Picture 1: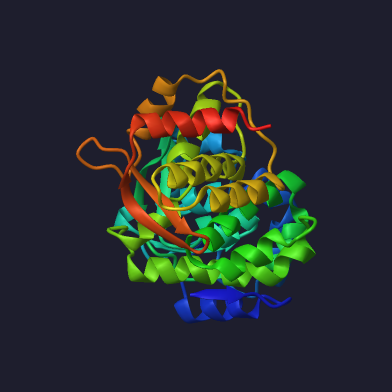
Picture 2 (picture 1 turned 90 degrees about the vertical axis):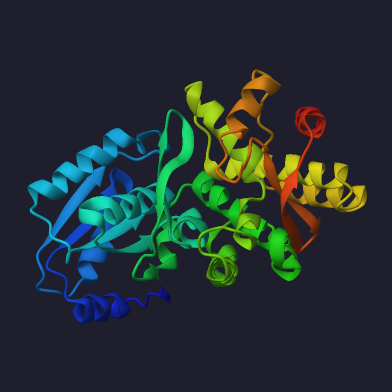
Length: 346
């Protein structure tokens, strides 16, 4: 399912030849159009007609309005159910493209070529598609597997540092929830550069793929992948609502710090282990100012988290470095304490 592309993209060309779709639809944003599409088109060997569809970059465009525009475009192209959508971009493009493909005419084939670290190690894997609505992250979506995921690590050289750092948060999460060695390898990195991260990308991808294969529709163990996201998504939504969008990975890093603290408050890990984890996350991520958000605002958004049931806010928490659990009920007092802990970090 995951292929690391060679310099000629031969795996992609062979895949398209075998699938033999009626049409190729290449979804990009303005950044991947400029920096990544020329590489793809320069290596694409096919006679199948293709169309380039460009949307604006940014999480704030991952909306129902954009989805409606894309459905209309596919209709204008007279796209049939044997077409193939190629999502060339980061997490927004793979989330959005997968959602459009899985819903148009009840589903057409799609493949992901993630161009960001977040896309490579997280968003493109696992068959979750989605869009945001009323500032709630991925509240509308489907479970739909891409036919294949193709990774060209050299695309990381097109990223600004902030995008690289954003994706790195998901890699850290993978280590924390299931693989202590992966965590130790990552926190030993002195500087976040593509070449320093390259050796660990495939391992991070396989961690996520392995969890997803055990629980595709997120009934149990897949919920551990949401570590850091219950609080992280709520704060990410609030920053977006206030017109101050932050990177997804920055929100996840914030969430992992708070939820590590909650793991300690719930007696799942020692304070020493919690402090060690927080110290190593903070080496890579600046502290965000969350003082303008009230506990009520944050909790109200957390209540819309997709993991919740019967009105309870469920957390995925750590039981150690490299181990985790899910469906943890947490008191408002512990949530509040974790947010104050983050806010007051020196």
